[in-house]
Length: 233
Image 1 (cartoon, rainbow, N blue to C red):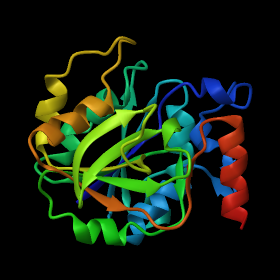
Image 2: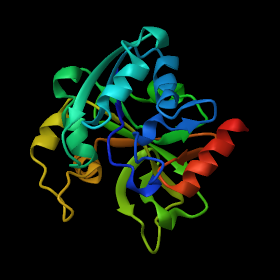
Image 3: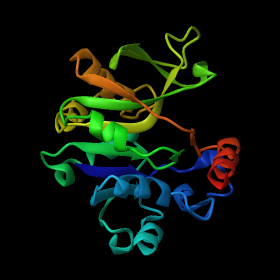
């Protein structure tokens, strides 16, 4: 299995912190934000990791991370020329992934637990999302479940069908790239990861694994503050 970290975007919600740098280079605890997903991947033995980021700060990202030698892995880099959505960024990984399954982490997702349980739960076919029970599911994409199988995902529902939010950690087999090639842009002009997940749900090939411990993103001033507090314990 190979790893993919999506670290693009403009970071507009964190402006002016992101005026001169990519948000994934901002500190969470005592290390840059992007170190956290890298360590989650290397801890489960993933040695080949693709970093996808934008044009403006690619040089800074490469200068920080280098070849991967310091992390016990090998980095490949891809540039997302413009903000075209998470699925578009993932589509850049097709040649990198080849026929192998991938685990994808949105670079601003910060979480406590190891990925080992989810890796052990995934057999390399179809897709798997990591879900987390939350007290306020209306704020998130919410998974409707039948055991581990995912029946639907609703974005910010008024009446949630469960208390399980979809986190920014996804497992896909190589069919994901055929799916992305056939996606139509959403109303905001982007290729949406929700449409990718719905592709697998409709085929009955989407399962879930529950994330233990705490989880947050770090994409807003408030969630960035919370992420720092959680990491510092």
